[in-house]
Length: 444
Image 1 (tube, rainbow, N blue to C red):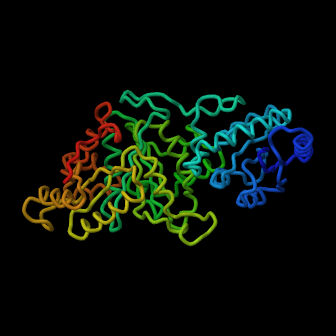
Image 2 (tube, helix red, strand yellow; image 1 turned 30 degrees about the horizontal axis):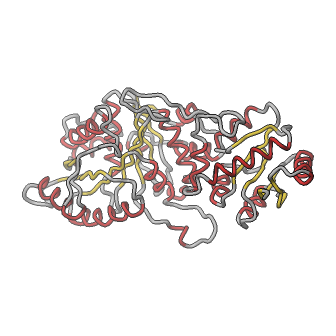
Image 3 (tube, one colour; image 1 turned 90 degrees about the vertical axis):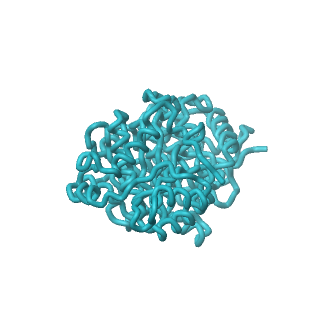
């Protein structure tokens, strides 16, 4: 039985020649629709009439978001490029196209590539939406038509021998501003102080503040620009490095969006690519997430729609470590217990580590560390891995100066607690491997 495919080839002569060859000979593929542009291709993909698509590299508005929608519809993609066009070849591979072949290839070669791409996508059917991002990380030849862009293996001396090298630490907290941005900023600074290259990413889709906290008051392209480049298949490690701000001593910052209205620029598939490149740029990537975990727009639309919380969910799913931040007062603790249950339900693989912030006796009484730890253990089944005292004076001084807490108040009790956490996470080989040991936990 022939594989039904769609075509969207800008060179009409090449397309006509391939369609004619497929009709004359049994090459295992049948063209069910010749699409005139990308919207026509996306519309045809939703009908379920095809299993693969053959498209040109210069197809207008072709980006990662479009390829993700095709993958969600179960459509494997094979790209055609002009012979010798290395830029087009690189762009398609960075977008995650399964196979890229020259337009002057024989019909047999093209048909074989389409069939193999369809089989490869079928093997990833359990998570089709992640296919483009996953395909771009392959480092071995696929389908026999060349080699995809390498993922950049490399190690950093911490036992991190996996593709991409770096580890992603997501810092999340429920509604009510428990201080996740403060924890993310201070943690990244302390990991960098250990002599490990660190990248701090502001991925809060409700309006990031990290740029201002480190004195970057001007509009900076940051994460939004990186996401746009990723969506167009143009993001690589050097480009990502240029978009980061170097704070010195091994710490880089990728600022977030300055206005909440810009959240549509942070597409989940693009964020996944940014994180993949960030792993190659730094040994540790600390990401400040948004608070909301709702599936939002997906609840109201039958077709693919932008998801405001998609960036947060993408970060949490990609993270090697998830730190869940609680604020140590009655209202904050109740919000945290409910939010942690939502986090565990929404991202089952997250296995979050609990960090209690703003610990103080004035709202807890008695021994605040003991009382809060007991409450967290009782209601969540998990003991906190860090208890951060509330040093209002030190934090205010750092914020006013636009500098790091470690530099403004090196003896701050909050700074010392976060430094201890950073040492436990990154101070020795394997300390940060969430799924291979990690912190010892106690449960009821």
